[in-house]
Length: 119
Image (cartoon, rainbow, N blue to C red; front, side, top):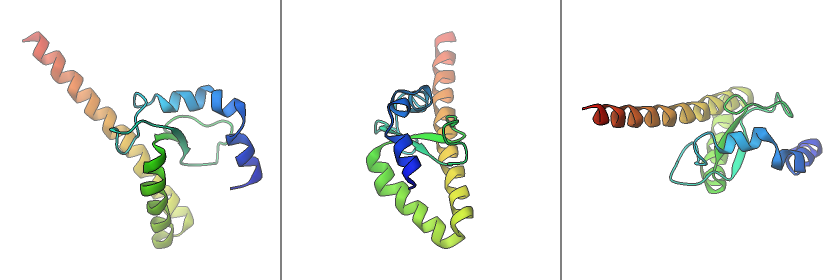
């Protein structure tokens, strides 16, 4: 990680910023891969828009343990198999897909509850 990135991530603007806060609430404060865990970090899935990140496009909510035990090894494996650029792209696609999957599950549950309440 570059010194500029480290300074940005450790800055009060990042820690209290709306981008990080909204990302952490994207799945009601839950991890995007295993929602049984709380999200601690708004993880960058791309660094192209640093300081102009948007949730889901550039950031996803992750638990520290999931990040360390799942994402880091998966990223390293994908980079080894596919190369750095394609591996990062596949990982970004996977993480965005996880968020969208869980939003689909939430929508389906809410639709089922609404249908039960109407009958």
